[in-house]
Image 1 (cartoon, rainbow, N blue to C red):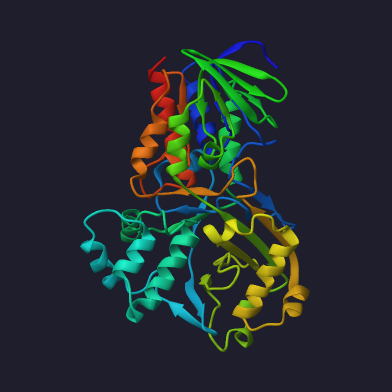
Image 2: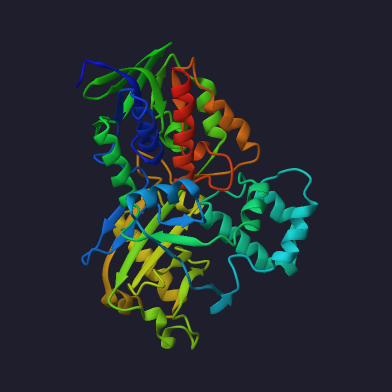
Amino acid sequence: MESKTFDVVVVGAGSAGLIAALEIVLTGKSVAVIEAKENAGGRIFTVYNGNGYPVELGAEFVHGNLPVTKELLKKAGVKITTVKGSIWQYKEGRLAKQEDFIDDYSDLEKKFKELKQDIPVAEFLSAHIAGSKYEELRFSLKNYVEGYYAADLKKASTFSLRDELTKSDDEQYRIEGGYQQLVNYLEQRCKDKGVQFFFSQPVLQLHWKKSNVEAVTVQNSVRAKKALITVSVGVLQNGGIEFFPALPEKKLAAQNLGFGHVIKTILSFDDAFWKDKEFTAGKDLTDLNFLFSAEQIPTWWTQHPKKQAILVGWLGGPRANAFDTVNKENVIQKALYSLSQIFNMDVLHLLQNLKGGQMHNWSADPHFCGAYSYEVVNGNDFMQTILKPVDNTVYFAGEGLHEGSEIGTVEAALSSGRTVAYQLIANF
């Protein structure tokens, strides 16, 4: 590996690392990016099935009109399409349509207004949404927080949930051709400007003193004046990189942040059987978008309005963590069983209709140790502890260090990476 000393070494080639590397190199500084995987993208993981259709095993949606994501997609010449369709729920043996992700919003709004200080969602449900009257609302909220946030109800912030739901009328989009195009654009721009990439090299240690760092991998080491760490909150929580001298306050703060577990399953079928009323008790699911249930794989969505006969199965939150050691075949089996219950179909019929299945267990992935972040009570205090640069030499950025409703998204990673890059540049 190079014996030269770079101005900056960026650890991690996900969205935060890529945009930060680009911003820094554009100021004339020399930049090295070290990445544990063999390719850039981080938790963007687009695979292309037989006909070239993109399937997202990682980030999939653009959640609203997000400025940085949209700006970059425009520069890359990539189009987005609006996600449309109906929302259904399978409960107690029947399918019922939902008007929105959360019905009963007027009652919920009143309960939110009663809150004087932030509390965990589990406490909010038991103290403020108790009784049989709110059974349906509790079911929807639990599904939403564990599914959408991949969060632990005992840690997730109620204020964050409230803020999210008040702006949840934002459009959702998909990227034509897949999220990978955003990665390709940023990576190519970095390379064109002279950023050096070192792939398949997890950073094991970071030795640092003021204006001098050395990132050590199994193969070699990279020296620089400053380091920007963009690994996941999960890797920080698990001490995936050893710091010399140690940074115990950063690790402790990371352990107090929320980081969700997700197992994502993609099933491709010969035909969209859910559009056949024979399997929906006569209900019209031709424009099905999302479907919630209490099955082992509880949350499902389609590619509507696209015609592909693909169902995405989603298990998020603490329940996904219990699946840690389950292999791909077992997860697909559980996914098919869940669908057989929801649609009252024989598993064998589903198997005969199945063209292919893919699965990614983000919690079992050692490069991430989980899927994405969510807001916890007093989360901003913990974030600020991690974000504070160490001796103007070691910096941190990533989707889990972005305050606000975009936390856990590609937009959060891009915003954090760019913001911290500007800070780092200003401190040269």
